[in-house]
Length: 125
Image (cartoon, rainbow, N blue to C red; front, top):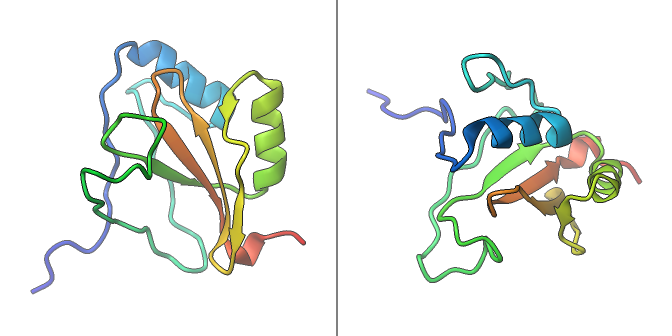
């Protein structure tokens, strides 16, 4: 019998849920519905979502002090990061590019580090 076979959702608390929902809608284009969230289809060619646990001592999410980080799939990382910077968002200067794709990071207004990932099959040269 299979037990867990995927990620059904990501849930987190906010000091100001309305403001944070509005930020995610305005800057990341997430179609936040009246019920407070959205549902993403999984239609990527790899068809997987990564789930991982890091040691409490890890600084992988720094400068965030949150014990989690959400990775969002994007189509054009460099264009999105440029837009986020022009909108006044706190965008990490570092961008990682490897066989795994392109990775960039932005902080939301409540100090949560967000990872933005452009998969390799959609990477533009």
